[in-house]
Length: 225
Image (cartoon, rainbow, N blue to C red; front, top):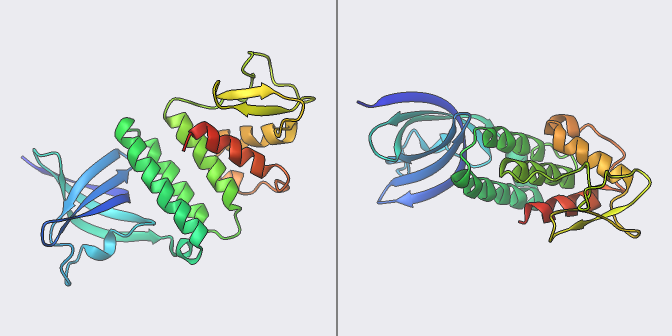
């Protein structure tokens, strides 16, 4: 017996298959879902316009006994078209989808859908600092893989002090006390907010120009991408 399910989905990857089909790796609020879109590469396919990258899609998937579901319906719910206006944002969008695609194979966690959707929505907003978006993603990415950055104590298990500066220790995967460290109290405060709050909330934070680059570098190093 097969059954159909309607889902919100984000396309992580599309791979041509056979003469006219395409295999899709989808991210949904219920977790990862791999499907085949039959005939989607034909000129008059009704599915083609509903499975774009950088979009929130409304899909219907029929599940059977095989590993692949069958995509029976697809419509664009939200297309984040402004991402395509910036080469840098587009490149990071591709990187994000690639990383989430790989990570969700290891940890099939429904929260990946929320993370990807938030990143796409804010990348689409040209007023939001890109490094802030990337920093938020890398911290969420590491956390969902079970490696949340410790922003309370340093690698010596000492509570972080607002009067000290720190650096990221890639060997210990944590913050180390350093007189010439790039991470001031303001940077650590911002990292804590970024790690704890939804991206839309974080995007409202002002006055981050002086510290966001240091935060970005730490988040990227910790995520090891």
